[in-house]
Image (cartoon, rainbow, N blue to C red; front, side, top):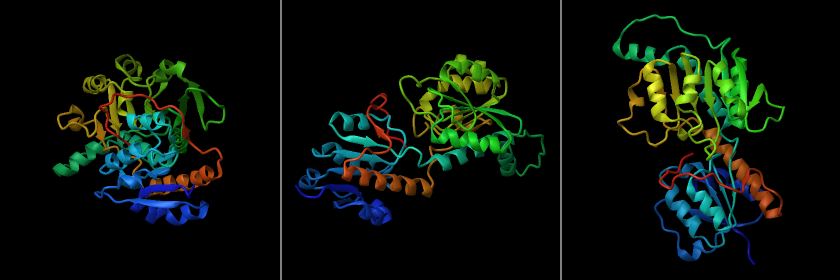
Length: 330
């Protein structure tokens, strides 16, 4: 049997090829966007790297090849989330699956802090005034002394809580199983109602599963303090979007910074676009060059483990389910 064949984009190879060659021997099959992969080559693929440069435009064609590859033994993805059905299909066909969990933690945590500051200091209002050439000084809030609840204490949540504390905030984490080594006081999920009642700001940084879909609905929003704010960098379906809009319109919820939505791209007629107390970003919190670099480093590390027959980092054995019409997302 010959060397294993690694399938990756031309861009990924240009960026990470030197590091990959250092970890072991393999054959390379490059993916060129818009160019058909010959059936004989599809049959040769053993390993695939779904890199950030392929998302979103070339993801369907690349992943279609991976699904059709009968020998595919392992695919590594640039993202942390694998809640799209395509990844479940990979597991169903016997392929191993690893993620780049942690690769985007720093830029996403920076986005969280940016969002907390922007909401507290009414950056959206200042930008509207600037556009209208209006000079309107006003009182704003400090983050110091506020309490932030961080739901989901993976790499993103841990870094977000750490940075929030550096700004003088009290951080309370929440996760399924408390390990005791978190950077802040951390509660289990059965205390969600308690958390909502004491926080000024709520950060959602957890993956989408059947247990977390709709985690924040009408009842949970009502438990938040009047004027509370939400930052969501997890998945849009974590929140009942209609209930969120009603809470924002009523004034009970003071503001929201949303990087993820139930439907992406966000429909043009969504009320969220025009709400004065909402910041909309296009699922871009992790789109920094450092994220792609770290994802490539994780793939190179795991490639060495795979070739040596050793356990790999961030291996997923069961994917969370989601409606089949869902679009592939980071």
